[in-house]
Length: 259
Length: 259
DNA sequence: GAGGTGTTTATTGTTTACATTCCACATGGC
DNA sequence: GCCATGTGGAATGTAAACAATAAACACCTC
Image (cartoon, rainbow over the protein chains, first blue to last red):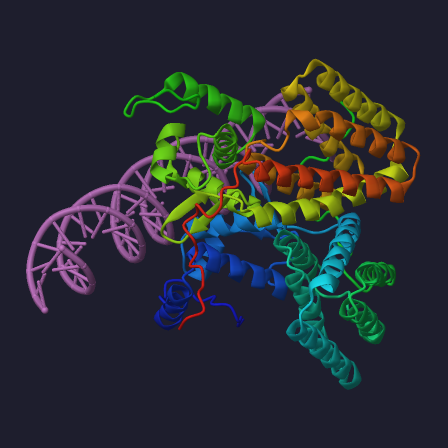
């Protein structure tokens, strides 16, 4: 049973790994809590921690070679990010998004991304324009070569850079947080290969509007693109492709109407 | 040197206050960390903790009658809310918003609030309509009576209920978080008395659009209302009324361009 | 006297230990 | 046979001790 994470037989102190990680942490000047948070996010992304799973503090602390304190800190941080739910005296659980929340998040993201595009259309600078164009071309190449992973990476970057370049930081943070929430908790299943080409032609139209400075048109393209993604998600779950995991969570007391 | 918060001479254990708080906590089934978070927020709101102030863990723990653990937890939670900044090995500091961030937050909130209004216009139910109308009337009364505090309370509730009723939870959470960030860190100075009447007439127009089901018109009114608030903020700081506190924070190394 | 360096002290980061709560299972009563 | 109750174990909530970092002060050198 081998894993990529530094899970190791208990009792043995893994000197090599530990000092390497510590050196890296010191170099990056981040606390153990942050490091643990990153590790947990990767566990969620890789599926090691599935939706609904409980984050056992002792177990995780032992696996990561730290004490429970940093693990707790990371769990609380993930709670506010929306990746886990903390229940008093019961612990932290990886959230499972119900369809409703996914759709609502798409809805909000559409508005935010649309606004970012509109802002960017008014302020975009040449180097940024060049970068976005390069990303779109990279996606075209990925489509032609059928490289799904490459397309996925470039696709994420395209959206990320648009909200980055638009200049509104709070908007960027919110959009990235919620996009990441969707990515991490839905296991990427939405990006079916068949839609890559259509998706990137939407990117091209959006970028053209941004480059020509037509803010409102950019807004509409960006909104439409996000809503198209929403529609792709809907058809995906209709075909049973993706995880429409509902309510695996230990509920926070679903309130009935009885006394 | 007297303060409203439960700051007390060191060494004395304030039994009465502590047990009362604990009982309340047990009744509400919330962890100490949550309670401390609420206490810190109130300290920030009341001005006991001013922007730029450091959150001394030991001191706060002693004041609140808990250990440093819950205080740390609360500080990290507040960090993600955007109320404090945590610097490695130096502690948590109450954030001070620079003008740029306030304006950008207004900008984002305008879009979100506009979308909430548009959504609500399509789904509003009679009891919700009645409540919103009642709130607007309450604000009118407050204007007539010159009751600033009452107007402020009703005003906050009006916006809150619109995003609540619109049905999009992620949007609601984001909007409320960022609105609260502005309220807590700017000490309410934006709501100059002279603008109450104008503000509430905007509310009336917005509500009319919502009630008549005109989504796009509601969106525009809501957006315009938020941007009007933004403009009021700008004129306020131009007149030196409000706290345009810039960069009191110990900076996270403002990067210069030299080697 | 100015600048740099070593030391001190206060505070945070982290770990360890204790108290409390919840869940599961077994036991007994109906 | 089923439900209620009690008990045991495991995990979380909290507190207190330990380690490491950073700011402040004094000192020494030039």
